[in-house]
Image (cartoon, rainbow, N blue to C red; front, top):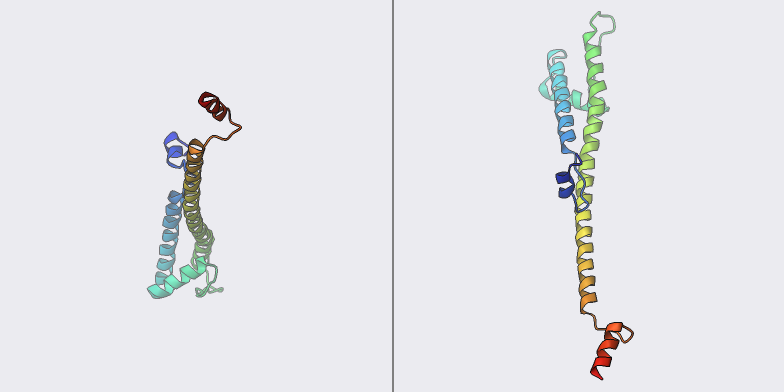
Amino acid sequence: RYSKNNIMKKSLGQRDLGLAHLFVGFALLFLVIIGGVLYGMKKEKWSFSGSLLFILSACQTSGLLAPTIKTNSDEYFNPLCVMFLVMVGVPLWAYVVGKLSLVFIIRDSNKKNLITVMDRRRELRAAFQRILKRPAKSGDKVSEKSESNSV
């Protein structure tokens, strides 16, 4: 991660966006969403949109749509499946949303850092040009030598 080429690319104060982690999080969240949609369509007999609403609301912890869990039956698949989807989906949702917002923040700060670094370079270059082009003052050694040579 901190190879010489990588450091050279970000020499203007820019930070790495970390997009690889974001793509992995998106992929895992997509798998959880597919699992939730399949669960809703097969086990609960919901439509695609109802199943999608279920899994997205479960991952966002709002829980707008709840599955039917019968307490007197011996079927443990429904509660275990919903528990697994929620236990995996909620942290993945939080990770992806947090990482996505961090990408936007870092991208914005990279633009600002690039602008400030370029402004600093421009100011430094202008200061050097002012120093090189300024007239000699009376107290400088260079001006005293030039005055003594002219007399």
